[in-house]
Image (cartoon, rainbow, N blue to C red; front, top):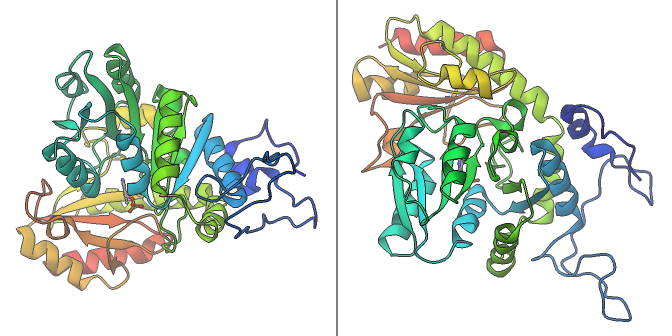
Length: 383
Ligand SMILES: *Cc1c(COP(=O)(O)O)cnc(C)c1O
């Protein structure tokens, strides 16, 4: 049983898990089905649509409906991590396919793609941050199968114009996939701007509590390529477990309120720290001086996200010192949880990282914004 929320705001449907009410018990919270295998009919069919949990599961299916709804998608698939979701897209391409991806992007994806390229499994070209024509410059008409963008992108929060990137990809006969982990469907819905596939590390904002590793894909069309990705997922088994799916379903219900709060706090922190004498630069798409601000204003609704970076005057040692003095921010990797995190990216990314050594990445959580500003100011005052 569900009540009909179809004409209402996506925030309403997310908060009510699409209006799900358990048929048998009346429970207003969806159940967790741990079963790995499902009964077959006497005629050997599966009239209930589910056979084995490496294909599908009932808890995952409800979650996938919620995720598809968030992005205005036709279909969604959940995965064991954001990396599993991402790699399954690339593994669904023919061996040797040409792909165009950003120079500045989530480090783990960049590193894996470089290895795929070096092993001859994919032909990968990296485009420079800046105008969308940088993407066009890397396209090989007729050969490029996929353009991958991340916006805003780690850790400088460069913004890519999704509609312009979609046009470039489609004109060349390629698909556009968007890593929208940082924007979240609260602030941007890439499919509405012409993207074909959206990816989220659901480990971050979608779950929002730093306690689930998960990934997902959402598609504008459940076409042949989508079915190929689904077949890779079933064969390699990078599916999401039912307990993680259930927790993620719970996290998604509070997505809108969490993202709106984190964005408002990040905007206030970015504005305040831009004036600090020991800050060389604040990188945040919500600041008018950020190179992606104009595109972000068109493409992002209701805020610019909870992620920002600081470049600290005095270089790497000064930046590491600021992170050491923070008392409210936790020094840890990842993002999108209730607790604010600080990370020195260059040292975690290691050799070959394009990240400047004086950069600290901040994930703004749900604490009182005055406490966060106070903590950052005392740590920066000590430079
Ligand atoms: C964390 C992250 C990933 C990888 O996701 P996992 O869930 O850690 O596998 C990919 N892209 C972005 C932008 C991320 O923040």
